[in-house]
Length: 108
Image (cartoon, rainbow, N blue to C red; front, top):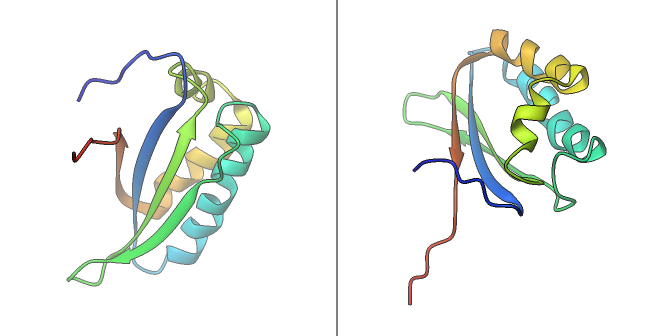
């Protein structure tokens, strides 16, 4: 799916795959993520939802669902020191991540 340039909120689903033994450190940064985005006006005021997942190999991931305020917010975040202060240390705590723009599907 190509990212859209729609004017309103952009729904995101991010999976952070934690390095073994670094789960607590990663979770601490994930907990700071949405509040900082919202404080800076980059995310909507709908609080992020975060889940912990464990795959069959025992690898822990944190899955975060949140809304960018609009399609430009992600680009602005990459240029914002307060956001980068959260994102940059995450890299050392993860074996990988998936960033997915999502949209609801009408099942009717």
